Image 1 (cartoon, rainbow, N blue to C red):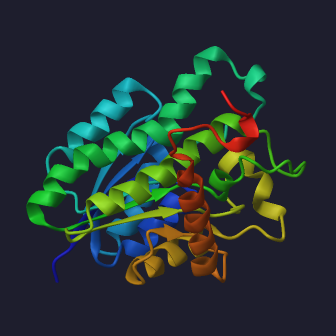
Image 2 (cartoon, rainbow, N blue to C red):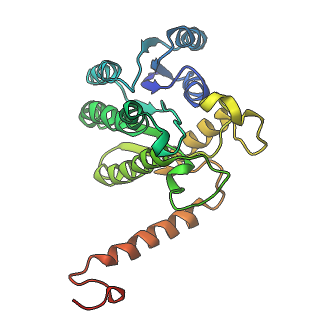
Image 3 (spheres, rainbow, N blue to C red):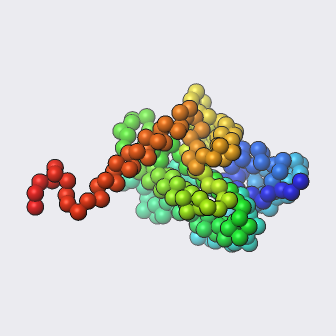
Length: 260
C-alpha cells in the first residue's frame, strides 16, 4: 500500500500529535514543532506503526523557522499539509508587547498562508492534496461581549482571517482534486495556554478534534466545527448574512446617513 506524505506543524502535542497518531497507519510524516525532544519521542512512536518520519524543529513565529518549513514544502512531495501550530497570546491589545504583535499574527495566521503557498505547486502538479488548517471557534466571536471569553483581539482577528482564507481558497481550487478544510474547535483539553482547559467539563479532547476533522474531509466539509450538531444550518445563516451585507455595495450612502 502506498503511503501519503503529511507535513504537520505543532505536532509535538495536543491536536497535532492526535492527527499524527490517527494518520500513522497509512502516512509518512514531516513533523514540525519547536521542541526537538518531544518531536523525537512522537517520531519513535509512529515509526513503530510503520511510518517513515522526518523531524523538523522550527518556530513558525520566526523568519528562520518559517523559511525552513517553506523550503521543505517546496520540494513538492507533501500531499497533506496540516497547519496546527499556534499560540493564544490572550490579552487586551494595549497590554500586548509591541514586539510580540508580529510574531503572534505570523504564528496564528500568516504562517499557514505561506505554508499553503509553498505546498500548492507540488499538489497542483500532482492534482492531489489535502490542506487542513486549525483555527478556532473564537474566529466567529468578534462581536460577542461575553465575560467568559478571553481578551482576544489579536487571536480572533488572526483566526477569522484563517477562516476567510480557507473558504476563498476552496473556491479557487474547486476544479482541482485538492481538498481544503479549516477546523474551528471550541475549548480543547490540551496544553494550549498552560493546560487550563483540561479540567473543564465542556472541553473536547484533541483526539475528538482530529477524528471530526478527518471524518469531515470525507463529508466534503470546508469548515469543520467539531462540536456543532446542525453545522449546515449555521453556515447557511452565515452565508445569508454575508450576502445581505454585500448589498451595501451601492453608489449612494444609506438613507440613515441623510442626504448630501
